[in-house]
Length: 169
Picture 1 (cartoon, helix red, strand yellow):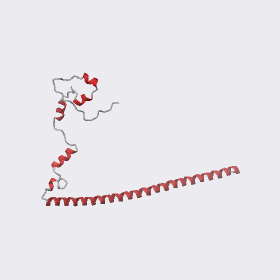
Picture 2 (cartoon, helix red, strand yellow):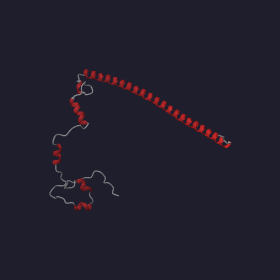
Picture 3 (spheres, one colour):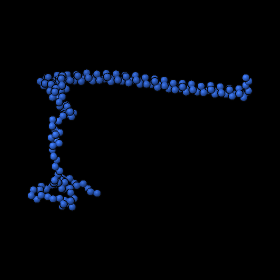
Picture 4 (cartoon, one colour):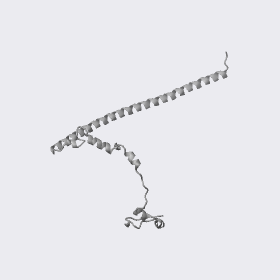
């Protein structure tokens, strides 16, 4: 088979182009690979930093616990010198008392209502307000105050306003 110079030239160009494409592909993949290697190295260094910080934090917590135990011992010793019982102070007692545990539950909202509480609550009848309070009557505009019925038989105590009325714009 005979090749013409034009065909040979086109084959050479094709070969050069394919070689250039392979080089670019390898360069791109090398760049990506080196970027991934850098990010892996960075993540490993961050992991080591985090682990060392965690260890340092645990050590500092241990130091704080030791300091608090020493302070607890000093406080207990001082109370014993003054003949005060340590079991009355929950922080200094060895075992938590049931009374303080119930108190903590009550403060945190763990108290359950007694049996029948909701039945009693549902049985209550709420009556709407029949008469205005002195404060409500004081703040009513004059035209509405005239339309309100009053009971002349009951004594009325005057309401003395203690602060300025709100400005009506």
